[in-house]
Image (cartoon, rainbow, N blue to C red; front, side, top):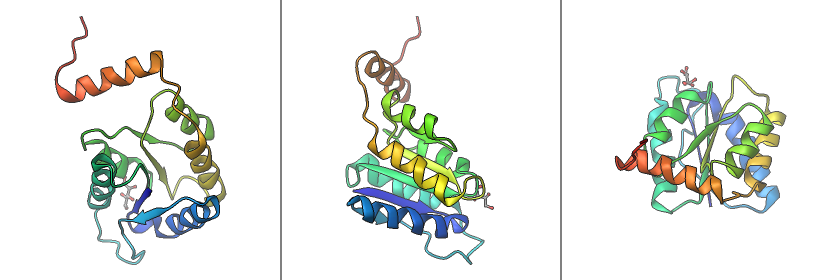
Amino acid sequence: MIALACDHTGVALKGEIAKMLDEMGLEWKDFGNYDAANRDDDYPVWGYKAAQAVASGECDRGILICGTGIGIGIAAGKVKGIRVCTCSDVYSAELSKRHNNSNILTMGARVVGSELAKMIARHWLTAEFEGGRHQRRVDMITAIENGTFSAD
Ligand code: RB5
């Protein structure tokens, strides 16, 4: 199950991504916003809802959209267990899964066109985490999050 969320800037792109997920045979759940005209909405609300769903295991991963992808990504990344990649290129998206085991992809609706966004999302969704030395590094990130990391 893929968590989808966006602020008002991302409603149209989120719809395109949902259509692509349907074509890929992947299930998704939309945590809002649903209203592109509501320019007063706050991206942390939507980022938090989707990130909670991923962190709790209700969803396996998430694709979140705001104007730049940055604000919603910062908000989602504050939730324990979330590793966000904010991407506007395919290489970073794929490597963020293979090396960082990112569980939320964010994109900027004002940064990438819908075809590029779908290509980025497809690469991210189909890439596999490589584990090994990358697992050690992801474990260090988790230790930082838990306050148990020592850099010495
Ligand atoms: C909304 O205008 C905009 O600030 C938001 O979509 C996002 O780009 C924030 O990072």
